[in-house]
Image 1: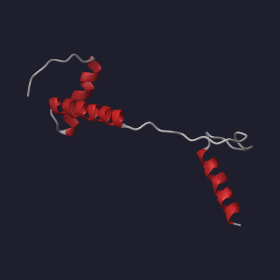
Image 2 (image 1 turned 90 degrees about the horizontal axis):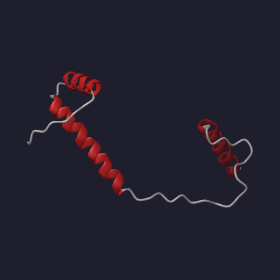
Image 3 (image 1 turned 45 degrees about the vertical axis):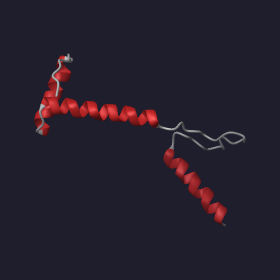
Image 4 (image 1 turned 135 degrees about the vertical axis):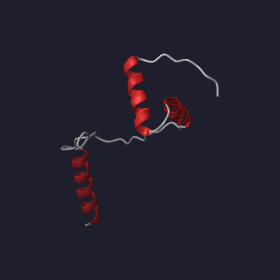
Length: 86
């Protein structure tokens, strides 16, 4: 393992040292784990296939549909499913 020097914000350093102590890790292990995790996420995100969203023609949202109300959307979909089974 090669030694290096990094400069950290004072509060970040204190928080990281506290987190290392609370988890029973050394500061070096905490930083190493954090960097590995961050680089793995970055690598995983780079491999993602682009998402293709299919659109359909129509007249937009139906009356009463609020895309920000997930519970309301589930209720509307349940009503639609129940009506289509009749």
